Length: 569
Image (cartoon, rainbow, N blue to C red; front, side, top):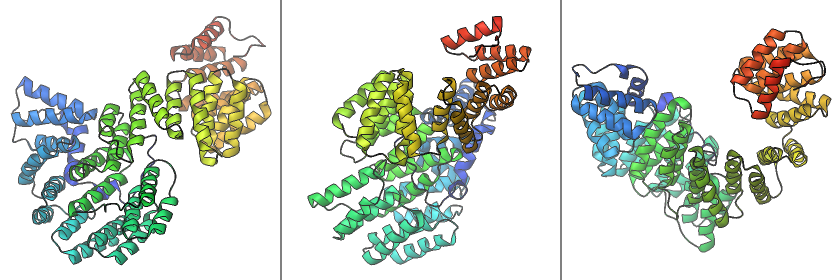
């Protein structure tokens, strides 16, 4: 998600948090699901199966759940279909249906972690804590999620000491301190032990740094304890953007109005939901997206109003390019939520990603009227205008975003960079150049800004020596960026260093083999060193990769007549 910053990991890895049953299911999608089920000679059954596989491979979770369930209904004894139907039912948010399937999975594979976890979550929903513990006791053991849920079930049964002992045992696991401390803090608060809760909250902050959920939980704790100055300090120290800003704004507003917030944990299942959410937040790598979604679905089953979990779930869908799914989740965040504004902006961003650009622009313009001083909204509007190639409008939106920032700091360099791109496309190079220089003043070691300004100077035959220095610095900072390497090679070409240009541009083409401009540049360099056949070969490639109309005409002319001594692209 563009607005939502990366939620701080709580010390878990995919390897330690992944339930074995779900892992089998995910692996099946990419490998063994292509085999037809034994005994299934029905064209309809096989069609459902192929549709399920296609949907799963494209992360269409609801369709995958429906088609796998249909296949399972045709062949109810197939254990692989059962596992997949269960997994995708959970992932699609159909937890009640998944619970029934989990019972069938557990009957076949009694120790299956994912099935037992789902059954335990269903029991938590009923507040049948004894049943929760019974399900977890049968599960194959793993050091994090099962342990956390078991601790909260003990707390629900009134066994506070047992819950404390269970959570304390997590500290023996490498990297689990932040997660353990946060759950211990919430547990002690749930048990009414304020001093111990305060100590654990501070340990959680030290072990894992500030994360939105810890800041929110601790701030609420301080407010309810009457420590309003400490609560204000807690909110004041967090970043004034992203998922932190709504927390601080809501907390400070409560303090100003003399309101007392509810605790995050009212019942034991609330603690279990926080544990599941923490696990999901820690699974940020691409290979863990599916299981993170599963955990978030279980989280929201227990805590339907945990809006930060909805933001994270939308983020996971965005990472999978499932923008309509992300929009659906974000629409579940109500107007009374502190995250409503973030969600509304992100809905519009996802509309633009779904090629609904006019709708996105209309929604963002409406939001800027409601939140005229919010830089994130203006930035999002500028980004969508750029996507629509409405560059003058984009520059104006970025103007408002920069006004909202006030005095810029290092972190604000991207705003000046994107405004420069809009200004350049609006044929206002003077303004673009000024913005790029300011962006470099804010962050002198940003390779993209160095490349933008340096390449522009080279292309304009201006400040070539300074441009080469900037581009070589950019390449050293980003040695695998083919576009920056192309800029260096083109600078060498402009300086008449044709052999250096050839060597450098060949490297750029190897890294980015399908770019029209890079192939065109290499063709020019080949021509200058006498490799005219190779030059025409590269120009033909440049044409095949779809250049802009003006560039296309130049390339066609070179293919007909080559380059004369004074010619340049």
